[in-house]
Image (cartoon, helix red, strand yellow):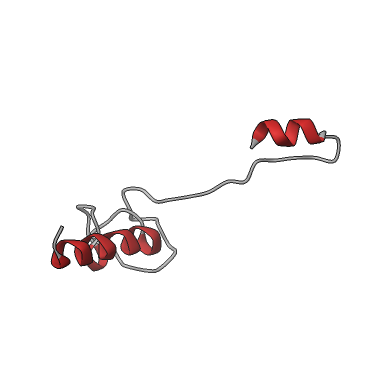
Length: 67
């Protein structure tokens, strides 16, 4: 992989994180929408993360099994 392709890949990945799946700043998507960092209303998709829910009654064995 040469340097221009590496830079293009990094630009696309950073755009995916900041703007969602769209064409903003060299992104991988097809849609053009207002490029507001963290607002994904016009994006075709976006990355998200949800932590597993553990309450006080969860045992250590259940914690270890979840990992």
